[in-house]
Structure formats: structure tokens, C-alpha cells
Image 1 (cartoon, rainbow, N blue to C red):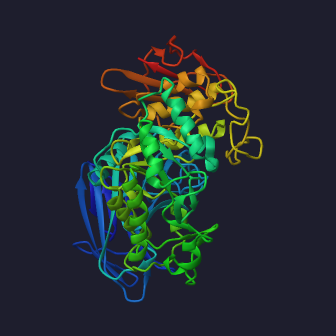
Image 2 (tube, one colour):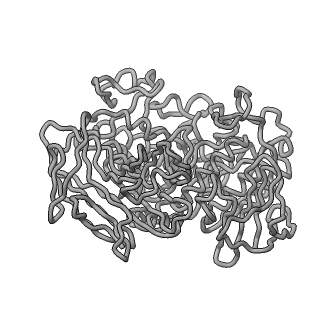
Image 3 (cartoon, rainbow, N blue to C red):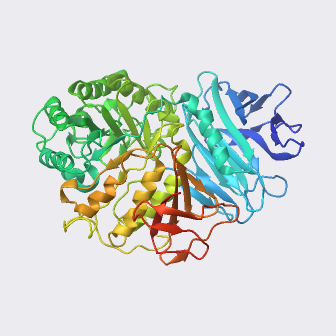
Length: 604
């Protein structure tokens, strides 16, 4: 089984018995047209004005397809990759009804997870897996990371396109590497892909634990709030169990003006000293790519900003995007982050370097850099400034840019105390558990428990506009605030993920019930759960984990009505276990029914 040159000038993946599992063509495109290369002996070919060389290899059971592209004067390379045909003349399950695809879609409200194609276009970044019910073989397509350019994997009109989006002139020979795999179990393919990328990862840290100011206080946080929360933690059963205390957005003057505002009297060192005195390692949030248009930097140093295709400064809302390829911008990054490190901060949450922003970048000062390489240049400067002993949490930068620099990475959108957020984020998390312990430590955002039965606080969330939660509409702050049962579903997900574990409620306002639920999460689990039958439903109902001594099973009912356990075909479950939340022993039978929006966390 593996990759080979096809007699028709393309690429073929053959089964061990010689059968082709798929056939594809190498394609390159500029802004106007796309050309496919007819490969000759030795893998040489030409598409449009570009000449190229293709090399095939196998590593750790996966096929590696290396495309070396030589410059073409005056031509901007927009796309390079592989196009695979589905349908009658191909074997890839692109068109048939019921085909499921793993989508690590772009950031924002688009949900990452397993989607049904059913003739509709779908896209992913970094990697995808295609699985058709009834077929024994699943197919994986991905890209090598880190990489200079953003990736895109897209199904449209019965074809699969896998590759990179350089969006720039190629000034020297450039290398683009695609990864392919085939196997019966999609979960095993994703694990193999994670193992393949792990060689470029940093040494794996233990899960980071701590308290973060964002979800309860949001931008209204003050040093007085932080002081009260540290005292509450130290007077609670959580004392000594949380490592970091992280100041999230709201501490700064403006984005790009990284100094404390009036709610944080004192210099960096004075604030860090207070946090250290309470027994925590200081952490801080930054948005290093952006500067407010009304900050001194945004007002008077506009030459530092990235440009759009018309040569104008690129704006995202009220913020310009800094050109990380410029030495003077790199000096700014080193100055900001170096000052925070010198003051004692050792946890850096780096936010808002989203793919959707980077896709708008037309050019930067260094024309040899793609969008991912541009961000990587800045992240490398930040890593040098904060040192190898600091923890960097990547909160939005593409894997292509951050792998090997970040210690952990957010793999969900923001969590809030609403059922729509719980369901949405659980789906995203399940699809990316394979990254944990391989690429970095995954971060599921926050563990939250505040609700009517865990706090007397009447203002449990910042101001928001009430609206119903409806299928097909945005889940964002929709519906009623979550109940304790619903939030316990999210706590179960967070604990089974075995990633970072940050609390973000007001600990000072929680009652004993809320405190007990959070205390049950610590210490974190050592190894991520494995979602069983990931491709069988929108969100897996069974998550199995173990720490070498014990096994734990998460059993979920994601529906709005009571439902039976309903074990999918081919899934072998234990018959009973002790629920970690209630201490009761639960028998798992087909007739066992779960309450709506509920979860069991069974030690088995």
C-alpha cells in the first residue's frame, strides 16, 4: 500500500493487492487559471509556467508527497497541491450520500468537527479524513507542518483539493509536502498523522492549571478583583492546586499599547510580585499581531502595518495588523514580551492571530514569506524574548505557524455558560483530541460551573442580548444560561480531554456545590480520552480514557430529551462503573436511559 507515479502522469495510492484507492493530479494555479502537471519518469513535470519535481516516500505508515516548485518570473503562485477525483471514475468517497468528513474549518463561528457531505462543499485546514458508511477503508489527507503557507483541503463538485495557498511569487525553489494515509479506523489514521508531526513539536509539558480572569470579569477586570480571587482560592479546597494566575484581556491601555491601565496601579513587576506572593506563577494575555488604530503605534507608525492588495494598511475592525517580517516590529515584540518576562510573567496567552485575518494579507516587507511564515517569524521572536522556560498558549494561530513554538493551543472557540456553547465546543474538541500530547497540550478554554445553583450572584455574565437557541442559527450566547447539569457535561468533557485546566468563574462567589465540582477536576487526567465511533454522529457519545491504573468512560446525552444509552455497532462498552460526580454505581445496558443534556463520568 502506498503512493506511486501513475501511468497517466498523475499520482496513485495503491492497496497492497495493487488496487488503486485513489488517483490524483498535481495542480498549480495563479489568480486566473489552474494547470495540472503531467509527470514524467523521475517525477518531473510542468504546470502553467512553473516547472516542478515530485518525490514520493513513506514515513511511519503514511505517504509523503513532496512537490518542489521552481520560480516563474512575474507569476504569483496562488495554490499548489493535489486534486483527487471522486465518483464513478475514482474511488474517493467524495460524492456519495452519507460520506463524513473531518473538518478543522477556519476560525470564528464555523464549527470544527465531523460533517456530512451529501453533495455540499466542505473545507478543512491541516488535515481531513473521509469515511463512507459501509466502506472498510478511510482516507486521510494532510499537509506537513510547520509550513510557510496556509493550507486548505476542500471538497467541491465531486473533487477533493489538498494543498497550500502561497498567494505570493516564488523567488527561489520552494518545497510543499502533502501527507496521505489509508486504514480501517479514522481515529488511528489521525493518531498516526499526529505522530508524524510530533517530531517538530516542543517537549511536551504537563497540563497547565490555573485561574484566568476572562470569562467572569471580561474586560472589566481590576487588580482589586484579582486580589480578591487569589484570596478566595487560597481559602478554598483549591489551595495549592492551581499553578498560574492569568490576567486576560482588559489589563492593557489599548492593543499595541501594552502597559497597565488605571485599574492596575503599578509597574509590571509590582503586579507580578503580588501574584507571586499569593503563591501563583504570573501569566498574561496579549494580542501581538494587532494594534488599535488610536494607539500611538497605530496613529504614528502606520508604516509598520501589513498591506492589502491596493497597498493600503490592512484593518480588522478597529485594529491594524503588524508586519512581523519587519525588524523594527520584531524589536517591538521583543521589547514588550522581554519586559513582561523580566517582571516575572511566565505564561503568555497569545490571541487573535486568526487564519481569517491572515488570508487577507496581500504582501509584507519580506516577499519570501507566506502568511503562516509571517506569523511564525513573530512567534519565534516572542519565544526568544520569553525564554524556553515560559509557557506559550497559542490561541488562534494556524498549526502551520505555531507548531514547535507553542506549548499548548486552544482547539475550541470561546466557552460561555450556555448549553449552545457546551455542545458546540464539545464537538470541536472531540475532533482534535488526537493533537494532545503529540503536537502540544490542547487547551479547551475554561472549566465553568457558575449557575443559579452554584452562586448567589445575580449578574453571572457580562451584558448580552437574550435570544432563543434555535437549530441552524448561531449558538453564541443563545438560550437560557446553563443549568448545573448542563455545565457538568462541560466539566466532564474538559477533564476527559486531559489538556490545560483553567478555571474562570469568580471563586469568591461560588458556594460549596460549585467549589466541590471544580475540586473534582484536580489533578488533571494524564492522557486524553479517545472518542469512540468519532465518525458515527455529530458529537461522540462515548469517550474512553485511562491513566495506566484506572479507566474512565464519559457517557453523554447531547439531545434535548431523555434517551437510551444506544451503543453504536462495533463499540464494546463496559457493563458498569462508579459515577465520579455522584458516587453511585451505574449499570450500562441498552435500556439505561440518560436525562436530557447530561453526562456520566464512570470509573470502570
